[in-house]
Amino acid sequence: MRIDKELGALTGIVKAIFALTVLIFVALVILWTNPQSFISKKVSPEDWTPKNPETDIPADEKLVKYGYQLVVESSKYMGPLAKNPKVRYAGNNLSCQNCHLKAGTVRGSASFVGVSNRFPQFRGRENKMGTLAERINGCMERSMNGKAMPEESTQMKAIIAYMDWLSEDVPAEREAEYKGFVNVEIPDFKADLVKGKTVFIEQCIRCHQEDGQGMRPDPNEKHVYPPLWGEDTYNHGAGMHRILTAAQFIKANMPFEEATWDNPKLTDEEAYHVAAYINSFQRPQKSDPEADFPNKKLKPVSTPYGPWVDDFSAEQHKYGPFPPIIEWYEKELGIKKTK
Ligand code: HEC
Ligand code: HEC
Image (tube, rainbow, N blue to C red):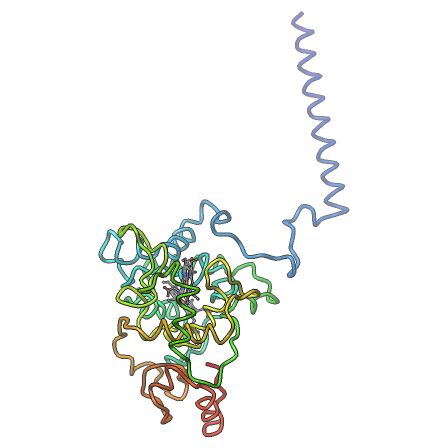
């Protein structure tokens, strides 16, 4: 009996070893004939899509995960709602993703996909080479109406780690597609606030409300619909306060979840007028705006605050028409401007 049992166990082991050998052999044959199948499949540039931060951040990438949370719920983790007053860098209750949609993964909303690969870059606003950290602080001090985060702060490191993670697999051929905003044909007339108001009422107030203050039913949470003017929004030094930039953003992204970069809902003119309308109201003022653009020649024509090197009025720099200003720079200074 005992011998039988032992023999049975022995043949079991032999069978197992045999099965394992066959398996290894088959694996070796596959590896030999088709090595690709063992390496993670490299997608072609055409088939590539950006990573989805909601599902794809590996569990051990804690800093990346934190960076993602900071971008999605900025006011809670680094703004007015943050428990620790020391990390209240943002001055308003916006989140980065109110403008950089879906945590910075959407085309036509200045996405973060590939952004790490574009820095350091020359920055006209400072007239020097700027790092990604400095660019993030540019939005912190203007779009978020806040104060610069120290470069060594966990928050800054986390946001950069998140952007690096989003940028690491972008094929070079696809980077341009995820950069910046869509193009808007610059009209040769001044923006019309009456027309802008009509667009606003028809297309925007169901979410942003007639008073432009959006919706925030729970004051301890982020906005459901963010405000477009008033105290709790981007300040007058922000990119969104230039109506050409705002028109580009609005064209590809608003009305929210209807307009896309390749299927906008508004015409270029409608986007232009409504961009002017939302930017015609009071908003926080950036301190020391004169210090922007040490080389004033590099200032975008639609920067609504002076000083400028040209003699066009403040009104025209804010509401256009812009083509005469653009032509002046090209003719007088040989500088081609696009915004
Ligand atoms: C009110 C809208 C708004 C908010 C909120 C905002 N940004 Fe921006 N951001 C912009 C605009 C507009 C630009 C492009 C500006 C330009 O064209 O000069 C931009 C550009 C950037 C860029 C450069 C992108 C590139 O491709 O070069 C980075 C990085 C960035 N923002 C990070 C952030 C971060 C991080 C936050 C949150 C802390 C944030 N932004 C919040 C509007 C916003
Ligand atoms: C269906 C609701 C909805 C409509 C309609 C809508 N928006 Fe928005 N808008 C949003 C949401 C939501 C966000 C923030 C996106 C996010 O956080 O994912 C936003 C963000 C914005 C922002 C950037 C953030 C800020 O507070 O400045 C601007 C500017 C804006 N919308 C302008 C407009 C304009 C102009 C219209 C009309 C042409 C419009 N929106 C129509 C829901 C809407």
